[in-house]
Length: 176
Image 1 (tube, rainbow, N blue to C red):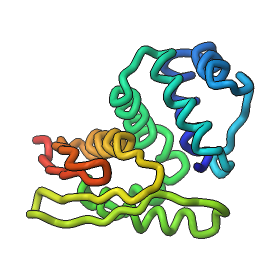
Image 2: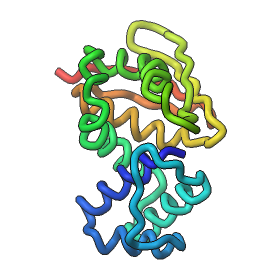
Image 3: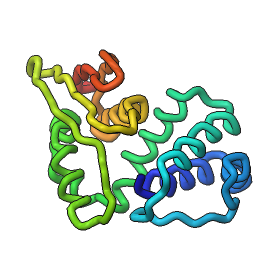
């Protein structure tokens, strides 16, 4: 997995819970508490999952609470600093989510060992889509947190219904 996930998580924890909590998470995960991760670094998937699991334990969060916090921070704080150029390409949350597969392809074209998730989208009606999340990592709960973050960014309520471990139904309701 690319280091951007761990780098973002580190920023989130340090900003909202303090540097010491991040060190505690790393120590509990069997990692050096001073480990540095770069966005394009390769980090073993098992290591990332272990850090995510220990983040929940140390911060006393459920898996979905952690995924939602991560998704909000990634979409609204972390990613705009790195991928800001892509944000301007979309007028609303639905376009952003539909366009994410293409963004992943573009961003990772020249990054060695990048294996971002892929998405297929089925449009049910003007306000509803079904997204199939395609990844061996099985991180649909994290994806759902990211979708909620997109809703916050575009000031849009997104109803999310998990249909399976690789499929969600999204209903877009613009806030007035």
